[in-house]
Amino acid sequence: MGNSVNLKDGFIRNMERLLGDTFGEFLASLEFQPLRGLRVNTLKRGAEAMVDGLDFGLERTPVVEEGRFYRPGHRPAKHPFYAAGLYYIQEPSAMLPAAMLPVETGDLVLDMCAAPGGKSTQLASKLGGTGLLVCNDISPSRCKALLKNLEAAGVDNMLVTSEKPEKLAKAFGPAFDKILVDAPCSGEGMLRRDPEMAKHWKEEIPEEYHGEQVRILRQAARLLKPGGRMVYSTCTFSTRENEATLAAFLGEHPEFSLVELEKREGLVPGVTEGFPREFQLDRAVRAYPHRFRGEGHFVALLAKDVLEALPESRGPLKPKGPRRVEPKILEAYREFERKSLGFFLPQDRLHVHQEKLYLEPGKLERLGDLKGIRVLRAGLLLGDVAYGRFEPSQSLASHLQPGQGKRVLDFDRGDPDLVRYLKGETLSREMEKGYVLVAVEGYPLGWAKSDGRILKNKYNKGWRWQ
Ligand SMILES: C[S@@+](CC[C@H](N)C(=O)[O-])C[C@H]1O[C@@H](n2cnc3c(N)ncnc32)[C@H](O)[C@@H]1O
Picture 1 (cartoon, helix red, strand yellow):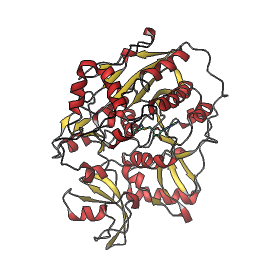
Picture 2 (cartoon, helix red, strand yellow; picture 1 turned 60 degrees about the horizontal axis):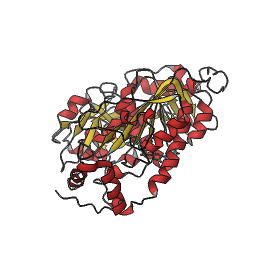
Picture 3 (tube, rainbow, N blue to C red; picture 1 turned 120 degrees about the vertical axis):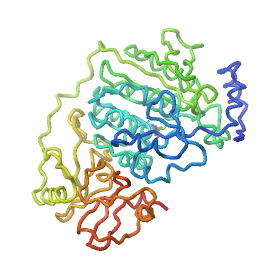
Picture 4 (tube, helix red, strand yellow; picture 1 turned 90 degrees about the horizontal axis):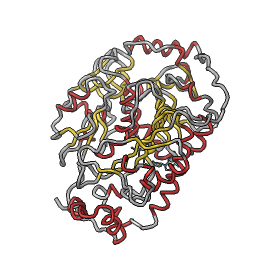
């Protein structure tokens, strides 16, 4: 189906220079519909089989194991499995950066420009509940969507911040094993998804982003451990925002070098012409819509030498002792655990902040002092604890695996009452009094509160279906 995009002359000239003989194929590819994708959330036990059973015309994506194409005409965001966090909707080339960062179990990982969280949720899947994932974005408003997506995916080992990279570097020092810098960019790779973009394209925009990208990378370099790995990615084609940004960074940081990325499934090497050969920019990959089955991305993997000058000192890390939770609050929470959950959380990781009870993520102490950092979430929000009562949170429900709730109202995907629940309506059911976990085919969605006959809807107001 046609998808006409009116391109500006400057953009056409740049792309002709970049693509040479294949420019015609690139132009022709813009006439096709954008490719649609979703990524299975492997944090949810058994999600892959559930998702593969859906009738969205699913097909595996190249490079990323848990990625799937879905056919046009389907609306995966309107399926209850999406509400249960079984998958995230993500265009296939956007799955490349996190897939190419070699995250290992137990790593401390920073996603520097994280909102709205597509790549953060993918990194969380790779960590599988181990280590610590710090998700940062400079924009507090975009962080709302980031937090929602992390919560819906059931992530617990996270710290969500909204800070300038300089501040993170000053506070944390070289603490991270892996960093993703999915930089702000001119977004030329999103032309098919957002043809309006073509209208707003301007020659000078890549130059503005270039400066910001180099500034972000400089701070990311200070945050990476010697021997660590960092991905730099954009969703744009401009060499100014990709290879030139890396060249400027590498010129200032001899302790960094590019790691070869496999040119699979139509990915092509980064551009070397016009840049110093020793930077080996062809080790990076470019995804073009006429070569790779996705929209457009650039990805480079950087390694930081082990033998670099001593990192700047920020004093010894002080181990934090367990923080005491008031006995009344702890008792209210333990009572809830006994009645509604099938497990108990360790007391030394529970803490209260502003009348909310949290499960603190492991390894948080490795970051040192969070004073002065704008923290939006540290760990898993378990619930509200005002007036000595405990009221479970949406994020706790989303974090639970099938079988972890004690009092469960489990719907089949086609049950009309399931849609009523997701719309926030009250349901009639004779059930034991107290909190009930509402689920779809075993996968938790949210809470309801039973008075014996009526279930008051506790599904997050901001997540309800219209
Ligand atoms: C390409 S988007 C990130 C998309 C995200 N990684 C994902 O996969 O959903 C770039 C993000 O960078 C953020 N940003 C811009 N300048 C920044 C800076 N100096 N430090 C941190 N984040 C920044 C923007 O608010 C924006 O959300």
